[in-house]
Every structure is written in structure tokens, then in C-alpha cells.
Image (cartoon, rainbow, N blue to C red; front, side):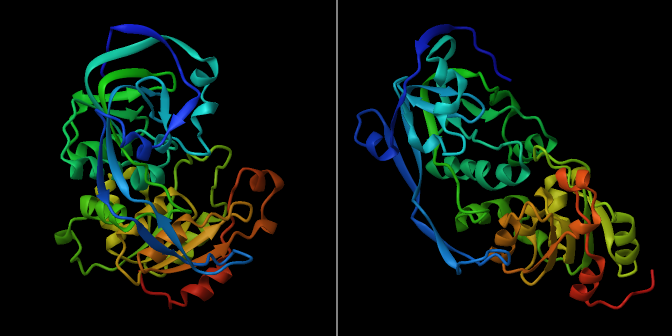
Length: 364
């Protein structure tokens, strides 16, 4: 992490300002990168009501502002130390909830007479959020043509964060790794708009950037037809373990169909992309590894098993947006103990899975 020594004292604001308002202020620059977009969000099988609908996205942009500060892991940007830029905060991680804004006065603000670009945002420890709403901000920076001296990122805790930045070609010496109490004041701050949607629906350009970056066109021609069962080592979702309690039984059956067990944490992101792109069938409990369905060929069959108390449509939406044949199954929670249900463990309903797969066993 880059270190700075010049420090000042300042008071944080409670007011905010939008990017559109900033466009009218001298010495700020606004660059529209992508037009407004609308992506179809399919009806999740476990939604009680509703229909397919379009998720609308505002235009994507990059903003350059002078003499501004950046706060915390989520990279809130405060224009000239007076107003938080609204497009750098979101309702579930609102800047007003941050302890530094609640305290009001910061005794130590590290200053740098350079230009700093910001891609830090909330939920950066989650593979899905990292891939689909943090990394695409780099694409906006690239398209803007603006140059910067340092890149402000959240503290890089996981291998996938370092792996992806290195693969994209980001110079490690130019990174400012932010902690929750980090406050940086820079001559110029470059702010790409946040990439958010409903569930995991994202603008078309963001999905294409991720796919083109980690699975170039010449890597998509393989005729290999893998069958994957995705196992897991860890969960970064607080309070949920999500172990498959009958995994041995499930594996015994799936291996008879030619499936291979893989643990995504054991592979680089590029290798994960390749594995998913080569697969014709994927079976997995709900989890961040399924972000990789974005790399699957259209028509790939995906069987996702959910714990009944956490019906999250994110990977179903990614799968449908990628034109996959995405199936959803519920954990047989009646076969779990109370403790297992509490921590989010899953019992794969094997008979139902067999019926949905409808594949004859093969000789191994």
C-alpha cells in the first residue's frame, strides 16, 4: 500500500451533490462513456408475483473533480471536502452510516499532490461484486482516456482481487489499499460511476468487459464438454456456512455420470473462466463461484441448489442474461438439523436432481 505523510485536520460534511450538478461547476469534467441501457430481468422461479421486466441503467460516466477527498473501504468521494458525491454511495452502505462522518472531524487526512482514480466500492470482499461492479469501473477509466497516478482500491484481502488486478495489468506500486478509516485528499480525483443493478443484472457492456478480459475470443473455441460439480472451501457471506451435508452421496452419483469435482478457490480467475466455458453441465449449491456462469456458452445447463431461507436470484439472472438453461432446486431442509439450517447448510435433493438431469450413467 502506498503511504503518505503530509496530514491535515478537517471536518466532514453531511450534504451531498450529484454528478449532474457537478457538471455545471468550473474545474470539474464529466465524460459520458455509455448511453442508458435496459436489460431484461427474468422472473425468478421462487418469486410469488411479478413478470419479466427490464432493469434500467442510467448513462455510465467518469467524473474528474479537483481538491477532493476519498473516504474508507467503500471509496466515498467528497467534493472539495464539502459535499459527498451521491454516485459514490448506495442505500445499503450509505456514507452517513460511516463512523468518520458520524464523528464529524478527522484529525488525520493524508494528502497527496497527485491524481487518484477510485474503484473501491461496497461488498468488495464478495467475488460477485468484485467481478461485476468493481472491475467494470476500470473499463470506464480506460474509455475516458484520463490518466492517473494512483488507483484507490479496497484492502486486497483475497487472492482473486490481487489476481484480477495483476492480470489486467495494474501496477501494484500504484495502488492505494484503503482501510475503513482511510482518508486521502488529492489534487484531482477521478470517479467512474458505480455499476449496480437489480440482483446481478448488469449493463451489457459491463458483462462483455468481464468476459472479454478473462476469456478472450480465441479461448472460446474449445469443443471440450466438461461436467462440473462445484464444491466449496469457504463462505464470505456473514453467518452462512453453506456446506453440502450429503456431498459424498451426491458425488458418488455425479461421478457415475462423468462429473468432476472442482473447488474454484483453487484456481485463478482465468482458469475458472476456462473451466466454465468448457462445461456443458454444472451442478452447484448457491454461492459466488456461480458468478463464472457469465463465461458459459449459451445453452449450458446449470443446476443451482438453494437453502430455503436464502433465495437469492443473482446467478439465475446472470445465467439467463447469458442465455443458459438455468434450473433451480431447493435444499431438502427437513433432513437438516436445526443448527445446520441456522448456518445455511444444504441437503441436495438427490432424487429431484436425478430427475432434472435425466442422464444415463456412464462407465468411468
